[in-house]
Image (cartoon, one colour):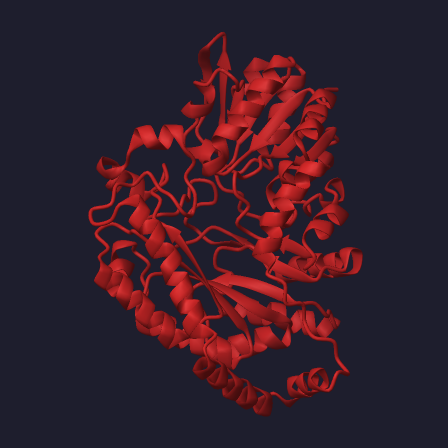
Length: 478
């Protein structure tokens, strides 16, 4: 039986903390469940020679890549085809733009949409050279003799997420990830989809609905991760973990009931938290929250269809800090029509809110999003076809700023905020806020006092994003 290699293509810049990738781990688990031989390879932690050897060991090569990295995926597919391999592309970009892969001449198949159910079905049909059966696989597009012979719409979204097998972490070198990320970061997801209408998000893969896993399944997986891998921290990669607050209260109750001790991170929106929830999350181990604010200007929030206000953003940040949780926020500069006044309003909101870390990206309209359809006239398609998109550059031709000016604005916003954040006045304010928090939560105050007198070791203070970038270069030595 043909063996399949599923590989995640390395970003040209590693901007996030390095951890095992969930996408290919779920697909690997689905293939194992069906008795199909599979190997997983994360290019971020291996060198080119290892990738070539992995391709040689397998017959069908499945690629996954985010939009900034599709050219690298095409380059690897070209190499795989030169070695006589069958090539398949999946993931979010393939779900909205199959042509860039099929037209390249280096991909035999594209599989659109969520593929945990369709990938095994396709591989079984392919193993039997049954083109009739392949023609019935939802989401499959195929090229034969340079002509598209199959072009099926994406399958319906998977309704019962509990039916999916746990991701095949055992097929990935977890010790290697931990070596390259001293925080020992592990990912988990509890939901798929997001009902909000932000214009810059690709939703074709997971949809605008909101599908959830059961509390029991989530905490069972958490317990397995904690006991098997002993992680330093677990990141919930859900787009909006706390959209339904009741289920997070239930999850926290179950974590506490089982006595699981681990630190975790949540991704969510400012309007999806309240103080009782944040306190409960902290009791259950939550120590960081990542918020997508995008802007502090109401005009820009409306342009981006965030359905947020600066007042809600500021209040959420204050509640988060009061609950003893550290906050990182994501912002965008260069949104359509943005002016210096809008940027100044964002900087003002930042100082009112006082988050602990700020990450700023340049506005990037991606294919398959409302921003692509609405602002296509402002996108330099030649630039886009020749260069990578990333957090610090874009093919969008802004009305008021050049790309160089936007990059300076991006850098300056972070520098200016960090100077303010680490100033003596803000340090004193945070000290007083922590003191009030420990008075309200004496069980954590005792731990803080223990650190002060040297009885409890201090928390790790390394910059995990710097570690991730360093890890990207270390991966070349494998």
